[in-house]
Image: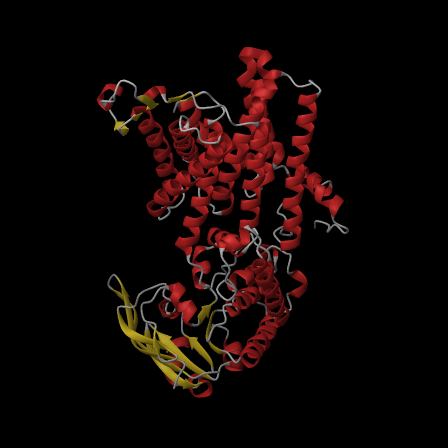
Length: 252
Length: 360
């Protein structure tokens, strides 16, 4: 059974049908790409998958469970984590604390325990620190844990966002244009990191990207979106050679 | 210049909080010595408890403004709630022969909890609003509380409590009945139980609570909501719960300050001067001037700005003029890049840590 199963997903804003009958099926452990021209509705789909928007119709199933129209928090708890197109870090907190916010639900202790500094607090904080440092190490940020998140270089901020998303221990990771604003070297490094994350954490990843080198380099399957509708779907190679897709991107 | 490193790393933050506790205790010892040797004027001695009151209130407001990132202009209202509820309790129990100290401790708890309850109830609708709207609604809340207290009459006789919102005669009390809250005249004859020692103890308790809270899972969640609500939701932080929690605790701390206020004066009235929006804005000035998110700074600003008008009393008419100029000067120099750099180079933390990290 597929990890993510989306059927007939639609949403309209006023008279504009932003996403129309979107369907996707992602297997566990897959690296899946969602591409399309600007304004095709890619981020809107992410927002529906994570509960920011409520779809007008359709079903979203994660691991067999229906998560359609649930709240963002519950969807995250069900196992969907994401990054954002325009980076959304907790700017005034340290790099380490950003990841620790992601660990919030995994190491619960009450506010009372923290005020009274009960042993539970020390134990949970110690485990959180260890886990967070482990994650930072994966992304090569271990020596920057005391930096404010806003003081990291752009590429590192993108990585930190992925680390924070992974800290919530998701089943499905959604990456919204992870390579945006990166230079070719950084992009290459990012590709390796994404692949590493998939292998190391046994993660299923759905990503939106414009960088074709990245898409063709790491995605196993693709869905191409145009004007809110699925234009093509299938193996990366086949999709990228599809004349319809070439037309949509390059024009007649 | 932006700060490069975050001080909220657990170990460093713990050290930072202990420095603050140390400063408070040090100030306490110095003041005690000065009082003991008689080198402190009676005017200054009279200021000691108010200094504690404003420090506590500023600490409470800083939790709301600095950490939750919500602008509240109603914290004088929460002080008012804490003051009246605790003074009411004390007045009600004054004849029952209850142990004085126990009664005062209970009064502190009651004042704090009542303010917390109001914070919670106000927070439910208000925290749906953001920015200016939240400021306006909390401002209105403060004014409403103050005005309600001005028309509230409560008396006690053998039959129990009587309430009225028109005048004292409407209470229909027995002859030997006793007024507890007498409308605009407020509560009179509350025993003078607040002292500098109690004030310092309450400051320390408030500090321990807010520091420990801020440097924990809860504090990180609250700051995450402040920095980016959408991202906080995306990693599973229940936004409403933590906003409400921080706002309630902030109100409760302000309520504690109110309890101290009520038990420092023999007459407690809800005047614009003590519980009006001027006071709320004054508290906000303490927080902004001391640095948002810095509890130590809030206290220092509260102490300096409360003492300043008294110190300048000799200048009579020019007093407020100089006060305003000092305020502007502090505002300018406090955030000037050079002075921030100087503070970082000569910070107290440097004395306690083995290696100091340079600022790039």
